[in-house]
Image (tube, rainbow, N blue to C red):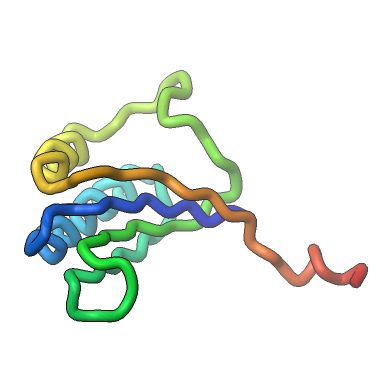
Amino acid sequence: MYVIRRVWKVKSGTARQAATLVAKMGEVYEKAGQRQSPKVYFNGGTLPGDSNRVYLEWTAEVIDSPYRSGNEIPAEARAFGAKLRELQEENWIEFYEMLTPEKHQDI
């Protein structure tokens, strides 16, 4: 099982707006059956740590390419993505493997 996290560094003062767009985008992908239930969280600058960051995180059994044959990106997700690009300064994706009980039995 994998944890996949998209991260956006957004313009100052836009973190909540960007997080709302990301949440809507996550819902579209979930309804389309392309992602499990996503979590969205952000720091607009009022908390310790990196500010003006928005995170979208979900789990997946496999890591699939968005360019795989037959995959269709929902039009509504594209529209939210276009609005989000207006607010972002940069973005990246992170991949993690989850430690499940069966993976640490031999220790």
